[in-house]
Length: 114
Length: 114
Image 1 (spheres, each protein chain N blue to C red):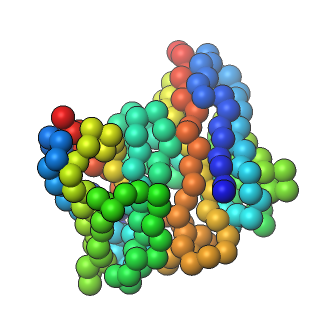
Image 2: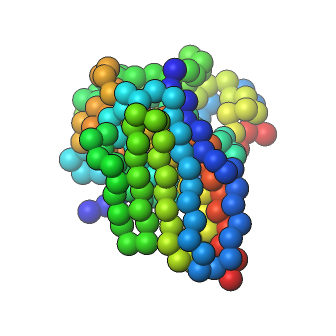
């Protein structure tokens, strides 16, 4: 059974700091891994999607890496800003089978202090 | 293009009642998935529908049911509501049903059961 774990559960940093969020998964048979942002009480905003054949994806100040063999992904946020405060979720999509449901971690709650 | 839409935004019900949540996918998307997100947890997969047929079901009791209409919109029904059903219900749409298809999430419906 695929399990996704995110560490740390919460993180507080001062504005301007670079930071790394971690995601691990137990089964390496994935199609892709996606990082989402969720503001309190809101839906999910997709940040980056990494296909299983890729090693990393970048968008602006965000960089996500994937090491499928070790079951790990990291989300790197450069020069953090108060507006980055949110919960960050990672999710994997399983390969094989006929459905595409996502399996999520519990998220990392990020607080960036001005 | 409009994103995934969900209605209602918020809903308050009492134990034992029944509720229907609605979702309209992005134009051209034929797959709809439903997720339940309890406070402090990551979303949990409930159902996936593609071309009006159920393609996947998560570990939820039979009180949960769903359907997809010819226009690809979807309804999630929950009968005999329990306090533990209080959650944010998220709908996601994708072009196809597989793990290779990127899922786009709606804003969610916040259900409170009293």
